[in-house]
Length: 328
Image (tube, rainbow, N blue to C red; front, side, top):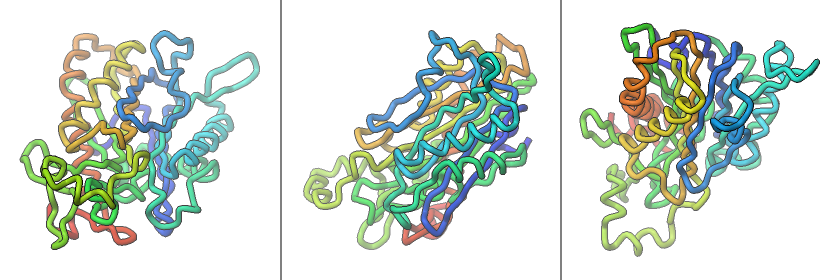
């Protein structure tokens, strides 16, 4: 166990990171295929191939998931992953053709570094080529490179977000894990300790609780010139398990996993966020009695990954990390 997404047998993760331009992408590969699900909860999502994950549709296996920066431009990273998997002979076979199924979702990071540089097909291919079963690198890497959090008072008062991962051995052969790219309007709290880790900063650099900022009667006046951008945020997650799940169960796992965002991000699922969670079930362990426990535990694993994302993050392009401001 390495306490990251790759603890689930059959799952590989690779990053493409461009720190200079403040962007990147993260690829999750499942060469043997996995039952997938998705839950889109935010009001400003950017996604590709999510309809194929619905339980009523025909495609029953996916071969990868892509999380990318670059806003809608970043959706093209999935084409690079498809090209890589096709070359490996991995995909859904239609006659003589191989069609890799690679859903994707993007976050907005154009305000960090160069807004003219976005991940594309080449970066998706590079991340796929780098994918391995090693422990997932965390912090300001991959899709978390340009991520920021705590934007209730505008981007100028925000802090560095990032990419985090966590896993849980359920003791029955079933492993449950999560990977999250945290680029939220809200701040981040550790639900186990109640401590504030990241959020908007006041003029003195003190980290504030985003909920308290929104609740302040003067908030409308303070934020009028620096309000969060309507399409400028999103937290993206992938949860994976080694258990056998049906497509309906996989979609339910993604739905329940959204509670992990609510545990650690204050607030989440706002009009300014495009929060999206994917799920993968590799089917290595047939343990139907464990399905209720998966639903009970997934939010806690997701929340731990979110905390890791901001804890491991490093400051970039003027956005300080939690370590730099002393909140962890």
